[in-house]
Every structure is written in structure tokens, then in C-alpha cells.
Image (cartoon, rainbow, N blue to C red):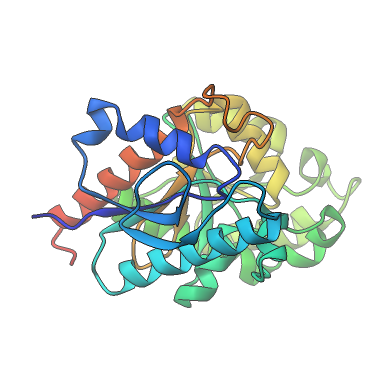
Length: 298
């Protein structure tokens, strides 16, 4: 029997349980099983690996603690080889912090738990975007966009596209930091002084202005775009494919995917959440697992 894919249920106050249940109820997803659910009891969906009980009215800190425990449990299962990959339902970052987990999000927590150099990629059938920096304030971006950060994002992206997506020679573009790639230094010199030399060193294209590079990628010129900071990359992929894109953590020793949206606390419990991105996340994780197994990976 194949190893299951673990699915964490996310913040119990959000739409995680609903979209997981809807996804598992579709013939398409059911055929990709088996699955191992990891989350709190008391949320309306049976779990094989409970991390405690959730009660309506519990605090955000309680929700964050349970969400964090589920991530830890799923990672342990994956590292032990008991599951073939992980799909994570959305978490609330403030609740996660209040629950005792000082991580800006899943990506940083997974990197800490595994010790792996990782990169966050948002992917759809239209566009793939990888973030060189993730959840930091915009004022901190220039200092964080370093040669090492860009090179690591490129290395992890190239390896991930090759191993997990079957692209033998990935075509990678680097998005500029400044408007019009600095316009010869008029709007900043980081693109000429830092990004251009790194692109040459790593053998990728760019840097190209943000207002054109994603369009070029969507037209087939590139397999992925490295974005220097969170919102420029996230805006591009969500405008292109919101509700159908998938968050993939590249660089981990196991596949991890997630929907491209948050907890949607405002509609939780109303039965109206769209499970499209969760379905895509499960399908992507299963595809990566199948590709790795076909290549002889354990």
C-alpha cells in the first residue's frame, strides 16, 4: 500500500476543515489517496493523528498552538518516512505567534524544523514565482536582498524544478528590485550593482522590470521568476491564478504544498469556501510524489 499524504487542518477557526472535507469528497482527490489527517479533534473532521481538542470559543492562542502542533506532527511523520508528503491548510500567523510559535509562516517554520535551505514558490498552470525574501516588512527588504539570498533562491528553484517538476533545464528569470530595473541608476543602483552580477554568476536571465517579466513568463519565455520581495511576486501570481495557484516549499526533503489563500475567518463555518486551491495543492503534492517515485527516490 502506498504511503499516505499528510494533510494538516490549519487554524481550527478558519476554513481549513471545510476545504479539506470538500476536497476529499471529490472523486479526483479521493483517487489520489490514501491521506493522513493531522489536526485537533472537535472540528468536525475525523483525524488519524490528533494534536488535542478544539472547543468553540477557545482563544486565538489555543488555535495557533494546535495549528503549530499539527505542523510539527506532520513533519515528524514525513521525516520518519511514514507519509510521502504534506499538504497544509491555512494558518493565522498572529495566532501562531500567540500560541508559542515565533515564525512568520509555514515556510520559515518548515525550514527550522528540517534544517533545509528552502524557497517559497507559488505555482499555477500560468506562472511560477519564487520569493527570494518572504514575510518581512518592506522597509527591511533592501538589506535582505543579498547575493547569498538570491543565489540560494536560484539554486533551490533550479533543483526543485528539475526534481519535482521534471524540467531538465529550467529557464529562470530574475525580477528587478526597483522600478524599470533602476533605469540606469536613476531609481536605485541595486539592480545594476547587485542583481545583474548575481544573475550572470548563476546563469539566469535578468534582472527584468517587474512590470514586464511576469507577462513574459506567462507567455512561455521562462519556467519561473525569482521575485526579490513578497508582494511583487504574490501580486503577480494571485492576479494570474487566484484560487488555482499552489504554494510549494522547494528545498525540503519531502514535498509540501498549500492553497494560495489564508484562513478566511470572515466566512468560516458558512459552507461557502472554495476548495479549488486545496484540490490543486493535493493534486500537486501527489504529482510530485509520483514523479519522485518514478525516478527511484525513496
